[in-house]
Structures are given as structure tokens and as C-alpha cells.
Length: 198
Image (cartoon, rainbow, N blue to C red; front, side, top):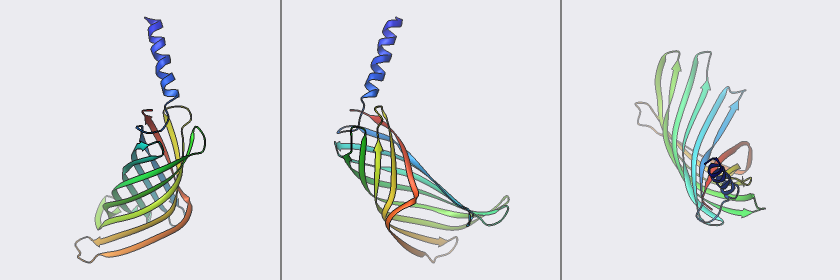
């Protein structure tokens, strides 16, 4: 019985050792991002679970469902908390740089909603509601080190964002648009994925 279990154990990990991306495989995982501005006393945390399905060896479709929270510290116990939920369909095209390294370009659009709250100790005051829309093209690298685990590193390259803010109880909406051109190395995104199939 012990020898049978040992054989099953070895076969399982042998299969894991050769699991690579390709047509029919899936990536399940996601990424996280943290930004901190000490001068402005401002922090952002973003969590983006992501799924990718390979419809060919070099092309995947999928998307992410994300949560972003921002804290703008105004005083010792006073701060503004902004929370946003978002959904972002995307497509990626991969170019192999070796057996375990894949360069990719990701094109995505997304939209989200949320709001800001002023917090003073135990008191909470709703400030506004907000909605977001964005488009982006980002370069990235996916590394699959001979196992079912993949790691990716992605940078923001070209992006457009539209933010609409409506004060609580108000009917006037302020809209701001932003355009980024060029690679932003100050806000990289790291991801960890589990590879299914192939």
C-alpha cells in the first residue's frame, strides 16, 4: 500500500512539473498592488483576482474583479477612506522568450463604482459616490518555473481613465479624465497564478 501511494505521489508531482501554458490551459490567481506616498500621507491597496483562458498557444482571454481601497490621512485620527469595486475584461498576446518565460501585451477595459467616507474617530460621514472607466495597454512577463505556478510582472504603459464624482446628497457630477503615455515604473503589478491543464 505504501509503495502505491508513493507511486501516485511521484506521478502527481511529475505531472505538475510539466504543466505549462498553452491552448486549453487556464491561469487562476491574480495580483496585488501597494502604493505609499509619504509626503502626501496617502496609501493605496489594490487586489485583483484574475482568470485567463488560453484559446490558442499565444492568446488568452479573461479578466479580473478588483477591490481598491485608498486612505488619505488628514490628521492624527482624521482620514478619508475611498473604496472601489471594479470589473475588467482583458485579452493577452504572448511571445515565448524561452521554455519558461513569456512576454505579453495586455489590452483591457474596466469600470467600477464606489465612494468616499470621512472618518473622525468613531464618526463617519459619507462624502461622495464615484464611478470609474478605464482603458489600458500594458506589457508584462509571465514566468513559469517548471511547475503549475506562474509569476507575472506588469507595468502600466498606455492608459486612459475617466472618474465621475457626485457629492453625497448632491446632483452635480464632476468628471475628470486622465491619459498616461510611457511606462510607469513607480506602480508595478505582481501576480501569482496556478496553471490548470496542458
